[in-house]
Image 1 (cartoon, rainbow, N blue to C red):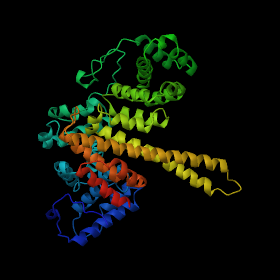
Image 2 (image 1 turned 90 degrees about the vertical axis):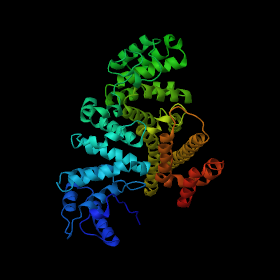
Image 3 (image 1 turned 45 degrees about the horizontal axis):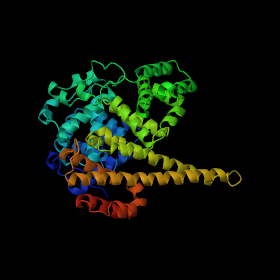
Length: 478
């Protein structure tokens, strides 16, 4: 069974289909999407040439959006639906219907689940990038007031567009009265150098530019440029010059030199991490140091969230920082306000997904090792994989418990009226929606820890709206 997804008024169809006929046409469209998911051009041709004796254009577009935005996740990758809708947009009869669908969904943003909201943002940015960023923005000009759900949507779409283009291109694409919703110019903030004149002071972190350690930063940057060996760089890092610094300044110097040089390209970043990995691991050993590294990354790339996402992902991959450090950083009182922004929600989901992916990979490896013929099987290998899997499962359970504890703690503080900078009614709507979306999307991973959550996290006096979602989740888990 599936829920009905309706965008258009039933009167828009030329033929008044009854409920069962409408569902049959939907199923036909869904079957076509399923059987042609690797051939989007062929799929689009079939969708526009179905042998039906009535105009099914509205049902077609409605079904496509319904599948793309279905909860907890769409049947296929978001990109597939995006490509098919772009193909159909070239059809003169479907072009205005797709535009109408977007306008209707935009008007109903306040009614949307956050999981739908975030995917709608992702798709619309992709759609604009394939249509020369042209849109009738004037229809939405009444929605540019700051701190509203619609303004957040427009801002998030423009931020996503920036990942697919460049700043001036996006700025020229929207009317001037939308410029307040544009993301900042994606220039890094190097606090040991001269601030770029293109940087808006309002878009910078509160800390002023620093002077202590400037010479050492410059020397490290030159060493990185000239590809000095790990031993040569380590000699500077453990020298008396570094020993004279406080722990925080020493970390600042190394991290910012790395960030400055790695800002050249994605390849620069990977090469630097791999070349000096042992130095990273020797310097980033405590929770405090790991948290400080995350803070320096978010400060350096304060104007370009995509780089924050990439850096966090790679630091997890190289096990320089762990998943719990990232979650604690995101939910800290200084940062929790930023969950209004899509990239913070993306960081949370990415951290969960990466943890789950590691568990899934080890599970697959163990099954393959156990299927090996006994004559070729290595018992020691199986034991090592099993131990690694047990550790990964334990880490995954602890991460889920931590995330729920942080969700409940933040929501409870809001209900009690505890003031936190940047936390307001709109933040609560988005944050509560994120809590619901995570609970629903990761039901499979949450199932093993439902009883622990019930006894540890939800044993206290939790707001009924929060506990209701958990109890519904618990019934699904069973």
